[in-house]
Amino acid sequence: MSDTTGRGPTAVVLGASAAGLCAAAALAEFADVTVVERDVLPAGPEPRRGVPQARHAHIVWSGGVAALDELLPGVVGDIVARGGRLLHIMGDMVSRAPNEVWFRRFTRTRHRNLTCSRDLLDAVLRARVLADARITLLEGAVAAGLEGGPARVTGIRVDTGGGRERTLAADLVVDASGRGSRAPHWLRELGLPSVAAREVDAGLAYATRLYRAPGTTAATGFPVVNVQANPASPPGRGGIILPIEGGRWIVTLAGTRGGEPSGDSAAFLGFARALADPVIGELLEHAEPLGGVLTTRTTSNQRHYYEKSRTWPGGFAVLGDAAAAYNPVYGHGLTVAAQCALAVRDVLRSHPLAAPGTARRLQRAAARPVSAAWGLAIGQDALYPGAVDTPPRRTELLLARYVDRCVATGAGNPRALGALLDVMSLEKPPSRLFSPLDMLAPMLFGPRRPPLSGPPLSDAERKTAAP
Image (cartoon, rainbow, N blue to C red; front, top):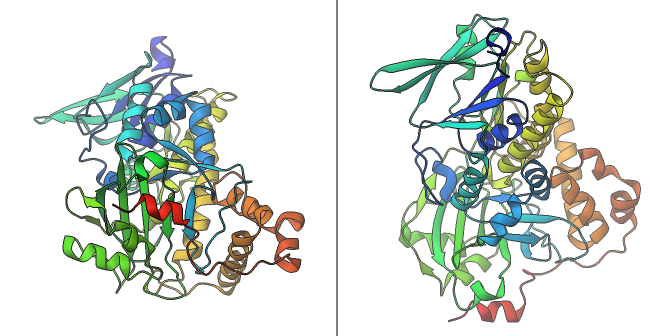
C-alpha cells in the first residue's frame, strides 16, 4: 500500500460491468487499479453469465450520456459509430405515460437518450477502460472477503479457482459487484453493525425477444415505442420496442403480480396486443423473431443506506447496483453508475484517496445520484399491491399525484416537458418540478391542448414497418 511501500495509491474494483468499469476509469486518475471479475470477459459485444439482464432493453438517460462523455471523452461517439443511437426525447419516441397520456413528439427539448444493446455498450466500455495502462484486469476471480478491521479495509481476499486464494492489498476497495453484493455480510464480519436497507418490490416480471427490424425501419431510424404500466390500475403491464444496432429490435414486455408475461414464444405477441394500447403488437405483426423469449423476475428496488452508517471503515466504498438497484423499467441503472463514478472522481480531486474520511466522503457523494433515482422509482412502485410492508404515507401519495399532473402537463407542453425530463434524466433535483415558469404556470393556466387519442406514430412510419 502507498503508506508502507512508497508506491502510489492502489485501488481494487469488484466487478467489470458498467458500474465497475466507470469506477475504474474514475480511479485511474489517482491510483493503480485492479478490476476483479468472476467471468472471463468476451472480446467483443457478446453476452456473458455475469450480466443476465443484458438481453433486456437498456437506455442511458441524458444525465448518464453527459457523465459518460465527461468520464471517458468520446466514448458515446464510439458507441454511436458502432450502431448505437442518440435519440431525441420525445421527437424520436412514441411514449405512453403511466397515467395513460401519450406524449406529443416535441423536438425543442435538448435531452438525448443513448440506445443500443447492453452487449455493445459493455464492449465499448471494456475496450476503452481496460486500455488504460493503470488498470489491470483479474478475470475468473471471486471476491471472498475484506481484509482489515472495523476502522479500515486494507484489501480483499480473492478466490482464483481450484481452492487458491490470494490477498490484494489496496488503499481503496470499491464494491461494484451488483445486486449479489456481499458487502453487508463482509462489513458484519469486520465487526461493524448492520446497514439499514429497504426493498420495494412491484412484482414486475420481464419477457424479452429479439426481432429483425421489419420493412425498412432499420434504414429510416424508427422511433422507440413505449407503453408504460399504470400503477393505479394493477396489474401494471407495459412494453417497449427498442431499435438497436444490426437492424434489430429488442422488445421487452413487463407485468406486475397477476399480469406477468410468460416465457412462451407463442404467447408473446398476444401479450403485446393486450396492452392498454395494442401498438407494439401491431408493429410486431410482420417482424421476424430471432430466437426465443428470455424472462427475469429480479426487478425489485433494493437499497442499502451505506452513506447513513454511523461507523464506516476507511478504504471501502460501495457503488452501482451493489448500493442500490432499481426496477429496470425506469432505465436509471446505467445513468446512476456513470454519475456515481463522476462523484468519486470529483471527491478525489480534492481529498487524497487514502486519507482518513475519504471513503465516507465517496459514499456520501455517490448517494446523491442514487437518491434521485430511488425517489423516482419507489414513488411509482410503492403504489402496487404487495410492493411494501406498510401502505404508502399520505405525503408519498400526494407527491405521486403531483408527479402525475407534471407528466400530463409535460405531455402537451414543451416547456413543462423540459422540466420533467431534467428530473427524469437525473440532471436536476426533483425541486425542478416546482418551477413557477416551466411547470406551475403551464399546469395551472395552459394553454391546454387536448390529449392525444392514440400513439403519435405517423402513417409514413407505420408503412416502413410493413412488409
